[in-house]
Image (cartoon, rainbow, N blue to C red; front, side):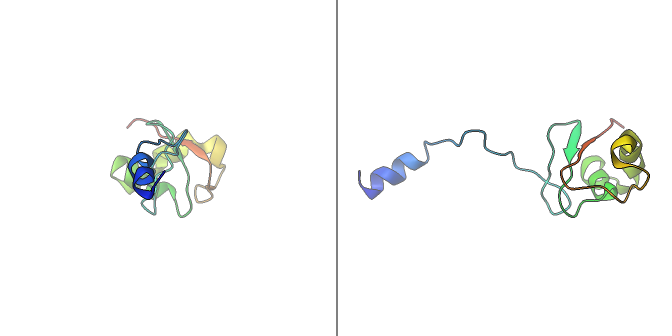
Length: 88
């Protein structure tokens, strides 16, 4: 197998279970589906609301939907938390 054979067949290979592209506060979303969002580094509820709803002031709705997970301080979200994004 020569170099050209390798280059011509490399594009045919598809990774198995490749991670989906994401976008969030840093342009990287950690969304698992249309109704949830996985928190990434640098996120805040207002940044998530801005990216998902187009309005950062809607962070209250995300907080209310996830209060049991987040706790009493909406500023303390953690990387990896999967938040429910309510329909507005």
